[in-house]
Image 1 (cartoon, rainbow over the protein chains, first blue to last red):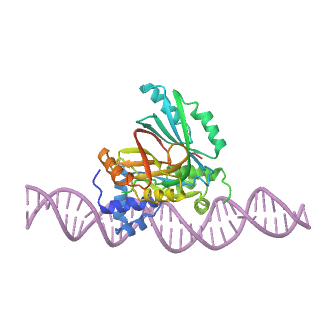
Image 2 (spheres, rainbow over the protein chains, first blue to last red):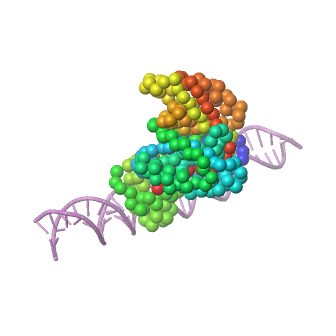
Image 3 (cartoon, rainbow over the protein chains, first blue to last red):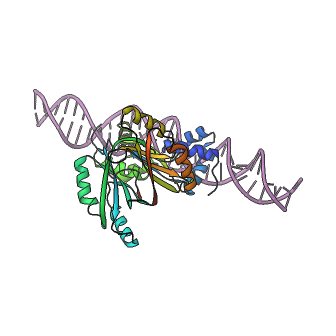
Length: 153
Length: 153
DNA sequence: AGTCCTGCGCAATGTCCTTGCGAAGAACAC
DNA sequence: GTGTTCTTCGCAAGGACATTGCGCAGGACT
């Protein structure tokens, strides 16, 4: 992976905002010919700097208006315990983010739900069913202040 | 905004995974002609179901290997207090996510840093400088289990 | 100077996107 | 049943786009 120059950074910044921009327009905006731009983009993708492209669906438009942050503690920190928990949590489509954490709780989850009844269902059918869980603590997002897809480069 | 049929759902599912797929291939994968697919995609974008497209940059490739979850309490819940805090936190490029929360803490943040020294800098120059903060609690992600861009549809 | 190497622009070719057009089918009124 | 309207489809054409080969320019090093 070569180092990124200022043109690469400009390309990445634009592609973060509009992942479906045409190569021709991207080239124009960074001051390159389309061919040079295409080759650089190819390198950025192959080197792994660009991990992929995703459509961002509006949670509201799909009815997902509720975000819960869930802290979870397990009964132990054995590798097998963690692995079983992680395999199970990956199956729940409502869990958007899951981190193994340092600190008081073992895992932190970001869960999307359509409404409170939907969250109750998720809590009952999925979260409570996760193996080795001894404590679940749910907080609800009252408002979203920031939701950036990527860190600024 | 019209309702989504199964073809729309299939398109959204594919575009979540590969936001830069060509219209021709997308059409083929959902069993439509390119023209019909293009028109449906146009509707999905204009209706707001698709909020946009973003390149997903690899945090590792950019050197951001560290994710911190930060809980923050303010000195009060007055509208003015919240507004000033939120305006300030939006300026920090390392803050990827920020929610106003119910529960023990007022805000929860997801912060990207390059390493511990970088996090120390962010904590000192940005987080500690946020107005009305009375308590900051940082936990660090030891491992990422799930990071979905969108909820499954 | 000579050589190597990287990155560029130009050009060509094949592919793709979009829009106009006409048709098929569903829903509905008469 | 028949006619009307609305939606959504496929087809076709023209204009735009992506990609690849090629040659060239500039820098690093011998």
